[in-house]
Length: 542
Ligand code: FAD
Ligand code: SIN
Image (tube, rainbow, N blue to C red; front, side, top):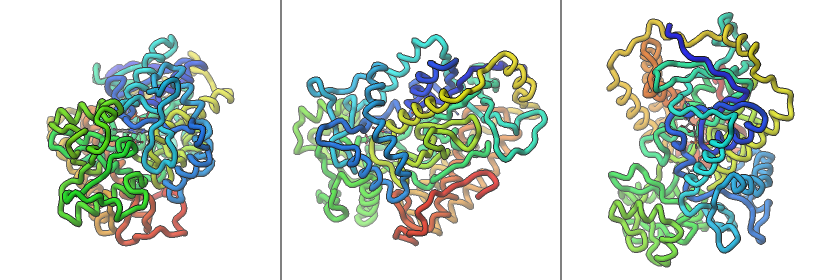
């Protein structure tokens, strides 16, 4: 067994997107903080967020209107308390983001407010079309000034440490989290990190699908490891497909923000028809599930590979001003968005489900909190309203730290560290080896992504889900066997997590025998009153 490092801090944060960074900044007022992130510090879904962050700030807008829009999108499954809290705390967290140095786009002295699908008012605060990048920049810069915060890049969390890892391992009905094991990609060792409180802020799982707006980091690690540790996972069937990503062989599903439709762009099919007129009175600004399904139907009906976004009737100057990144990126593919139609298709974008939390971000595992896309707080229900995700990450990071600091939580004293070090053994990799069969990992990853895209996509059926679960079960058991005898690597850990998350999505989808929000089943095309409840999964309770 290799001798590996042991670390300890009062707070341990997994992930350096908006949720993790915001929590770390607030937690640093109460104790020492370690942030672990598996790649470079800014690499996160947050960094690619375009449209913005929603908040009621316009004089003609109201909390009731934002609440109502969120609940309509959520199709009967939102936790109304979570919605009210998030909406009412939004203006304050925008102020806090600005105080941490975020430079949002202004119209004169006032914040410029955009509009997106499902919102009945202009309420999207943004930094042109690079909102996430600006937020990451500001939060990372603020964090770098904190003396009691350590941020470790290329540190990939493998497992949450619970009683299961103790030398006197015995089953417990209510696990406690004592920290994590994390793979150091520099030394190639798995190290121990102990903490009083662990915050899971590891983001979403878009990479489980063949086509996604999410960067490569989004492999659902946090959801998979929390599930393995015994946490309750909820509503994984609700995967949001963004209606408009660039259809181009080299573009890897580059997002064309919903804000572009909010600005007046229209959708056309290959015959030039504005087809949304046939599907929904809200046209291009209907909620995402409606627009994505309408595009899917149109593509299948016409046998086309893509539909088109048309901005040619809008002021070219204003389009360039509002969407500099989209304009420049499309130009690299030979598309001038002020004149040419943009070919677009839907792609997996956001996971509405995740690790279930209460209204303070606490999970079902003691001392483990979750916030951001990894969590299921009840805000989104069966479908997330545009730009409510960045918002949720900040609101629940704030609520978690307020809750934790209002209690007497034990600090990581020397004696506590010594106790934990004796109780939880270092990572044991004896008997594992590097089998040099890495091609299998790449193949399995692609197979999972294809199965999920083909059978667990925008439109599902009992038959497709049965096929999917058979295939994923086989891949999962092969990966588990491979994992047990193989030295840890990032690729293997991600693959194992992707397989678990794929299974959680399918299993949740198989349970819900109705259509609701993002979960559309051709066998049961209508919602059912008896199904107004969360789908929950936990180890030993399927
Ligand atoms: P992330 O920002 O994804 O951060 C997760 C972090 O965890 C990363 O640092 C990652 O490296 C780290 N991590 C993951 N696994 C591990 C591990 N095992 N060990 C250590 N670290 C780990 N939402 C909006 O509200 N408005 C928008 O305009 C918007 N636009 C979007 C555009 C795009 C292209 C995408 C992909 C998403 C968009 N979203 C938007 C959604 C939103 O960006 C995300 O839901 C949100 O940023 C999630 O933040 P997070 O902090 O929870 O996770
Ligand atoms: C977008 O800009 O279209 C993404 C907004 C979101 O995901 O909320």
